[in-house]
Length: 115
Length: 113
Image (cartoon, each protein chain N blue to C red):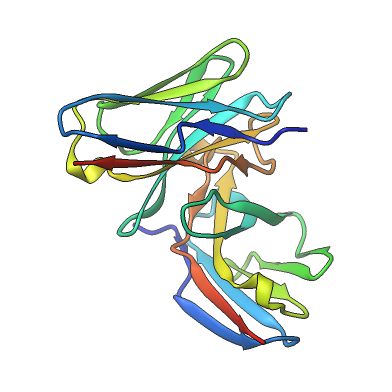
């Protein structure tokens, strides 16, 4: 039962263009969402988060959009840079039940930004 | 401010042995969670500790255990190691429980032979 899904295993983008990474969730108890960037054999690096009371959050080149009715969120990176090449994970947590105090991760999307 | 520190970075153990991994959270952070990353299962939640008490637990066998000390440092222990326990073990700290950003350490790469 995968409660957080990233359906695109990989994404390839040209430098300077927009990268859009998508994530879907099924658990209605999730109300806080995060995006992480990860390199092999290292810990995930926090990028940006969004609470369910918002539909958009921006931080520099990174913007996260949340569509609660569709249970969908996306991460936009503009402009994309070669240094953005990594695996991107979305994660979700909730205030109720077994969701509290834990992050549920998607399977990750490998982003490659070509110079 | 120092980040989350995990020790050791790499470990090789033999089947049947036990292992203890350590995590020092960011100063002032009181909640520590542990995750296992494997190629097949992705990032999976092991357990969460807050105020020296386990508050949440994932679907792992009882061979996986942990504890948290009064200074918020945490350890996790795996007994009777199996080949399938080979993974990257990650620790994350948050300032408090609930919906706040979780910051991860570099991880401990455990190889069971």
